[in-house]
Length: 255
Image 1 (tube, helix red, strand yellow):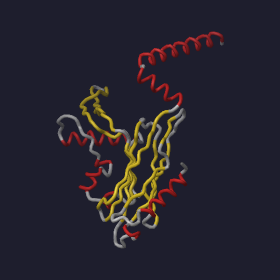
Image 2 (spheres, helix red, strand yellow):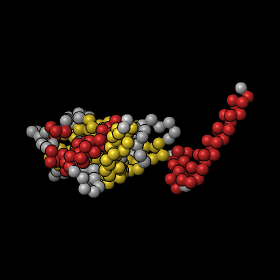
Image 3 (spheres, helix red, strand yellow):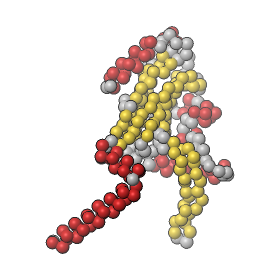
C-alpha cells in the first residue's frame, strides 16, 4: 500500500470517528516493514495521522500536542565502567539492565517539559531521562543514575537513542507528522511506534503500530547460519580467511 493510500485511509477514519465521545487518534506509518540488505545505510520513517474530536469540534481553549515514540525490542545489557589503572584502561564496576530498549526515539510538537509534568513523563517514559531500564540486583541510586546516564550517552552517540523537541508538526490541529531516523546498526525485531495525544498536560488518547525490521535474502541466510550453526559459521570463516591468505601469497610471489 502506497503512502498516499495510507493518508487517504487515515482521513477516511477521521470522518468515521468524528462522532466519538473522546478524541481519537488515526495513526499510521510510512513503512510496516523495513528490510536490511547489503549496503543498508539506514532509513527514514514517517509517522503521520489525524486527530478526531468529539462532534468534529476541536476544543477552542485546549492546548493540543502530539508525542511519538519509536521503541525497539527490549534486551538485557551489561554496562561496564572503565578506569585507568597504572596507565591501562580496565573494566571496573558494572551493572546489568534487564529490560533496556535496543532503540528509542521520541519526537514531540513542543519541548516535553512544556507538554507534561514530571510524573506523567515518568509514567509514559517521555524522554531519555525518564526511561525505566529495570536494573538488576541492588545498587546505590547515585551509582545507578551514573550507569543509566552512561548507557544513554553511549546509545545516543551510536544513534540508537534520539530525542527531538519540536519534531512533530500539527496542521490546523487535525493532521500531524513526524520523521524519525533509523540507523544501519539497529537490531532485528518488532518495533512499536506509539502516538500520544496530549491535551492540557493530560494524555487523552494513544495508539500503537508495529513495524518489522529484519534482514532479507543473502544477509538473512548468513545471519541464520551464524545464529543456529555457529560452529559451522566459524569454521567457514576460518577456511575462507585461509584461502584468501593463500591466494594473496601466490599473487605476491608472482609480482
